[in-house]
Image 1 (cartoon, rainbow, N blue to C red):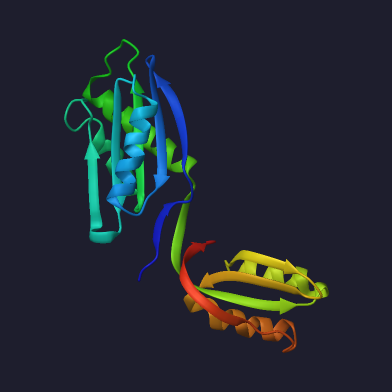
Image 2: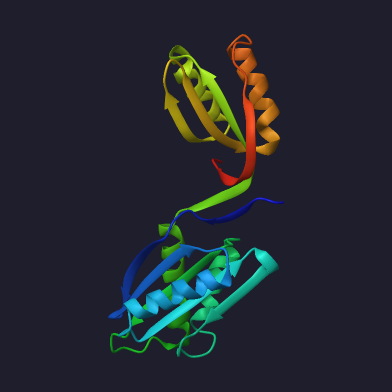
Length: 208
């Protein structure tokens, strides 16, 4: 399976445009049900808002959905969705809440405002790349800890767990195709003292 881009966590950001308040919310989701639950939770939270516009994109079955929630057709949900598509983002849902400030923005103004709110939302959720990764484990001496950290950071790996005992046991993920290169480099810098053990595989965040 191919790597993909999404957001790391749920978050929000907002701005004011001609006295209208736009609040952009984002959340990682895997299913239409999760997206719908998130949309409904924002609608419940902002029950008194003028509009709660939404869009989501899912990897599974390449699902793309958007809702204008009462705004003129094509001026709200589609611009929010377009931001996700242009950024090649999947498995996430964005809801933009609007409190009308009394000044009409016009079709062009609405498109720009909802696009901007969507961009603020996804940026607040931190865009990351997920890729097929190997889960590896390595046990090292304390004296080698700093060098090991430098190595896996340079290779774009992410530490998942570190246990400190008589030695240090580190579990981390790395892009599947980089496992052999990491093993080779570890052998070189440790003069063959340390090796990695593969304990599984999964989609995980990678550092680019």
